Image (cartoon, rainbow, N blue to C red; front, side):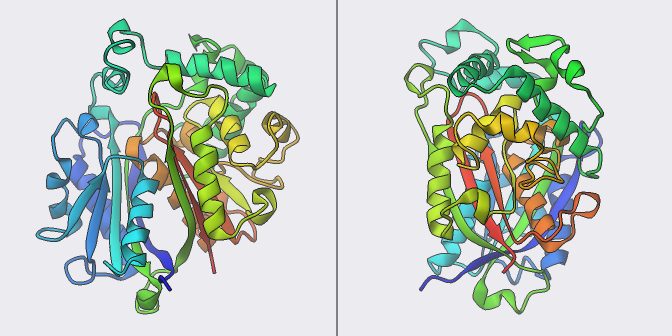
Length: 384
């Protein structure tokens, strides 16, 4: 019987809009020191393997995992890169442990977005090089097209997307890790300068810098460590069609299939009843609604109604993105999924401070790897 797996240590480097006086190595080191202190581990003695989530295009350096070991305490130790979101790496860590290859694994992810001069040019490298990339269009045009299709198919409205922005920016005001918290009205969101119709400027998550490190351990060693365990009971990931002209529009198929894997593993049959809260992707306002429906947290076409009725507010029956999500905290590139997991871990431990929810036992974190991908991950976390 494979061992159960828990997150036993978490650490972060402060999330900010820009960090001109801080290198990515310093960010990694700061997050790692906090995570190791939380877990009570010595990376040179106790950790069997290290995983970083990095994309060479974002880093500007090939084979980026060669630049990771020193600041994580992983020199001359097994280190590998997952060129995906942070939840991918947590799934890899869990599989390393469940297959008996390791007992303690460290996962790292960071964003130094402020160092990237032309991020949208990098996004364009992910488009088809023959038919789409030569158009030279800003990659966010795809989000506008996708939003139009989602609203048409689902029946959700532009005004309900604006409510997502208002909710998440308001939630972020209480989160000490959030950069972009603000009081905005529905009129402020709807009247913001247009960006990629129907998206306005406030519908798009703004970039941020920050880093996260997590220590993942097998059940057999958890009692010997200092950190309060949060158990990984289910995870799943999916990548759909890469080409823009061959994917299914109007539904987040990748999120639905990833969630089905995670739910089967965790024994969840009714997500709305079996889970207490969720941190899900809101890189664009409509994505929160699209992902709510794909995760079966409501019926198709009902996500906007749940929001209007207050169900997904911090005081509601099923809180969503109490942290402020990416709209309120900032988008953290490959570390975005780790940030969502970090927020879920704090909630389950009762350590979320001003945004703490009452009596939560089981939470979900979900991520999407952003445009133009159809890649997403889901993870289920529990206190006991």
